[in-house]
Length: 331
Image (cartoon, rainbow, N blue to C red):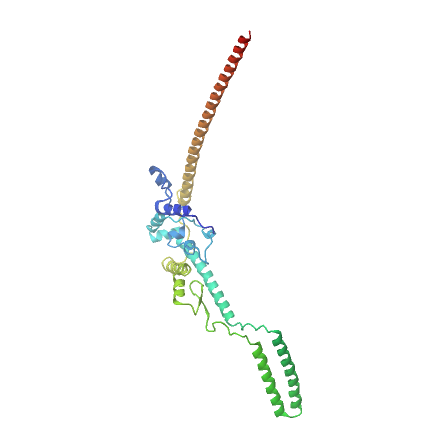
């Protein structure tokens, strides 16, 4: 995802601390002040943890497209949310949404951890890489193989003739030649770090090494990736304990009015009408400003045209006067 620039970050910080309406007139601020239930407000942030912010700039970074419930982190809205009664908060369903989202993320992370463990185990069981033989070594192996074949035939013949002891002696020669071939094919260098093994972190899925220094392990445990997943798992357990799963008969908070329409819908429509009215007022003010600017430009253009016309008239009069003067002198 695209990173915000410095100005955007500063603007977002001011919006969070002072509200997006901070530049409005004092009498208009309450009208423009955001509420915690506005669409632009990040609902997971209200509930105590936004996974997108928590895992930002890590390999588990959550795509911003997952931010279905708004993306603005407003501290005043968070305070307004925390002042609600716990049972009232449940009626909005934001905590249920966060619990389900975190549960999905944790299950995906656990699946990644299981996959990494399987891959590490398979890699540990892989045989060492075969040695690449030189031409001389290849020739030597071919000769020894041919000699082994001959000795095998000889041992079989001796065995058929009942010369068991001689057959065993030939068999021992065969084993010795096979050992020579194994020594030729054996890698020149042993595998690096024979006691080294990879370990998968049970919290974040990061790969650790058994030979890592204490400093390296400390950086891992203090890193954003590990601390982010620690916070997510802790928040998930907290929600499971304090909020619990969403009841099967749960419905969003809606109180019916006398006309059968939900007050929640009425509130939404009222907010939308307010937004439309504000947009119309803003467009009207912008239109008035544009008209004033246009009228000012038209007046300037007319004044310039009048001054140019007067100047042209004076030039014509001067030319006419000069022409008459020359005519009189000729007479």
